[in-house]
Image (tube, rainbow over all chains, first blue to last red; front, side):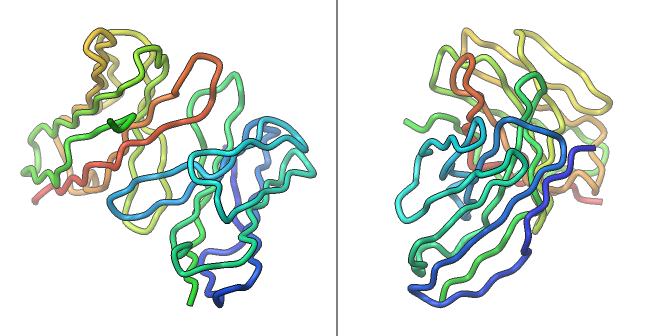
Length: 112
Length: 112
């Protein structure tokens, strides 16, 4: 089975901190995604990547950046954390000839 | 108009009954459709995918797609308490595009 691993299940950070969320997948998937999930809003796409060193903005990229230096790793960076970035963050990967995403277990981030 | 809309729920059904979940999408060229199940505090997991008009059955789950009406549904037959979860409808926005748009989800509770 494909495994998508997010480095932390729970994080508490202070306003203004730079925050790194790490995601690693073990099945050589080309496509990786970062979503955030908030009650009543569903999953919203922040950034995605189709290949190493490639990144594209999703629907809500403001306040975030990403890095993909290796195919298996896709990092989400909160440049200066704010309280409105308190959320569940979900990483997913997807192989071009396969069906559906595989999600990591999620990181619940609280910014205080 | 939201890209993907689901009946808001929550939906409560007795054990053994059929749970019916509905989803509409706005982009007429959408090609691929998915249903994810998400237990409380967990990440989404893929339970069904459908690409052609008609019905697709997998165990107690049946997905139905009507592209002319831009409508996809999920039926859960013989509902069990273990089916209690939030069900997310997801749509690939365009051909050759691997970004998923998600509905806000419908929470199903199966009463024993």
